[in-house]
Length: 220
Image (tube, rainbow, N blue to C red; front, side):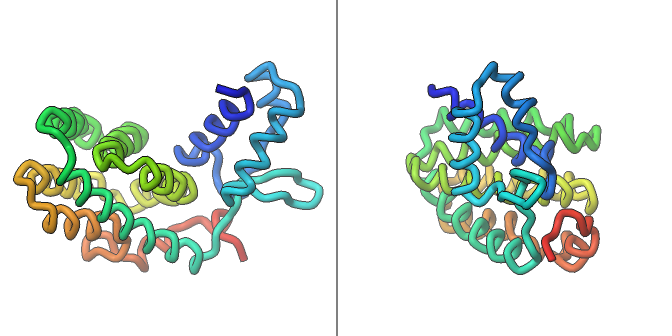
């Protein structure tokens, strides 16, 4: 793998995980030290990230993590819920029994982080659950699009878990999706996943989520 690609993946992962927040500067010197890299592969990586809309160039600041306004955030999340639902339907139809057993194991292991109210642990467990479904869809293009959208909204999603305290309900929804997949009920899986990712739920009201977002994370 090219060095520029390693750097791109590293920065994208930190954005998705909420380590780099919207508005945070990209420290090119830190990247150079971490990867023992010259300016060229770093600039190549940043150009790719800018093309993805994950970072933008700001006067006197250099590259910073892109902020979104409320309209952009809701538009992306609307698309994400639809693509996640399609992906889950395909996975339900295409995953082997062994792959479903792995999904069940991922879900069972996540119980501990939910009981501990571990936001970072849940972020990892949630990613593992969804990415296993992405892979099970057997559609690499769809998986890549979903991962990009997840990276774009990663910091906001992490904040939603923490601010609204909904780890338990998210975990229970994963269980419902898993049971529908085990039953090979593709239509039910589609409906459950769409509802799971949709922000405007009775137990996760959209207004509460938006009101609790720090203003620094939103563009004017």
